[in-house]
Image (cartoon, rainbow over all chains, first blue to last red; front, side, top):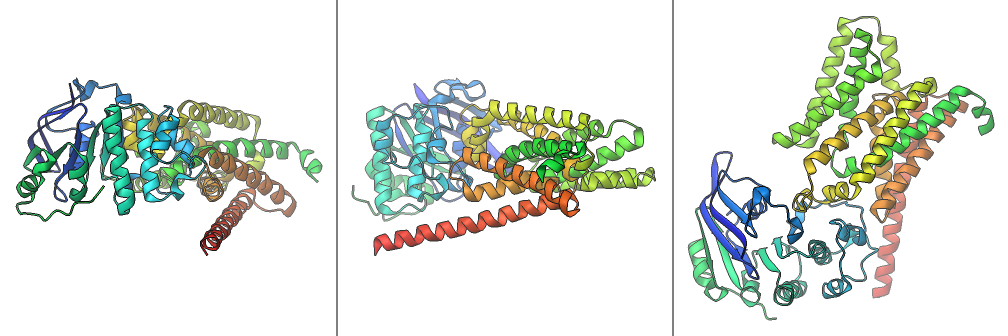
Length: 230
Length: 280
């Protein structure tokens, strides 16, 4: 079954077309990096897939169910962009982790290396720690699909590699389908299974091995990709 | 000292009413501040003024008329935020202006109730009657039940609305319930400290509690405790110093905010120093 199906989706905002007839299919178990130039509509695409924005045309299905009637939200874990969170949120990490009403097993906390942070105030954690707490929150409903929108902005290289390793483990060992919006093209080749490139008028999907070609198609020029070791 | 205060029935009612309003406003205020709707109380209070004017003009009970108009104003803010590209603060400012404009119009049409209006502008906690206390108790019960039912969902919505929506939460419905409860709190708060100062009861205890607490539940608890202390302290000090109670309450709330902000600053400096000493 496909985790995400978007068929001929068109979306415009204030009369400006963001997408036209975009078709995207994400298989269950895939680990997909969503890349594209700034303003290409990556976040919009994610929000449409989740039903947070309604397209003018086209159909969206999550796990085979049309988004309009989709009710199994425990199957989905979503982590929006960092700036979208309440900066002064006074809750502790334990309180944040309980927000979706699910329970998080000790193993997950250890995998994310946040087992000792429970009593700390969420707003006082480092960017990397906050992202790990958010992943744990997203995982608390035992989702089959994890969607992350630029989760590593402001995270240092070491934490970045650790973060990608965790995502890879979740995908490989727990079979979680991952859809990751990112600008870190140097990282994704080593971790993801496929790359989805979106740009206003088109989308293209391919294997990370063909990243150079995908980037050329999206940005209209060649890139020298610096690979991170892991 | 307190014994002599309690010898007066009007003071007993003021202390009970103050506690009821403090509990209601302080618990709701935490969510209001986090939702960046701190001025909503102020905006709705001005709509409540128009409601009072309608009541005085038509002979309808002023609590009822202000309750109806304030709830409508609250729903207006909610719909404006959801359906237009206007920010919450702008929607609040619009509703505030409309409420005040309507009130001025009605006051102009029906001359002669300026003296009555003054008690609504600055509160009349010393003049509360049993029916006021009953309404305050009902509004407190409604607030606490709503918060108990929707607590986790409200906290998640305050944290991030998109996560709430993609967790299957009907955020629009909960927002409506919340804003209606806030409107009710504004109307009963208006009786205590007046239209001009009611937003202080919603915003200041929560803002002080944010400085002190390390968890969400403690934030609500501290907000309630600070509010109770300041409201009761304000009423008692007003009695002995012959001051207007609403002004005394707000000044105490301000002092609580300043002290808690200072405490936060000092404790975070201490923590920073401890970290740098550990590194050295």
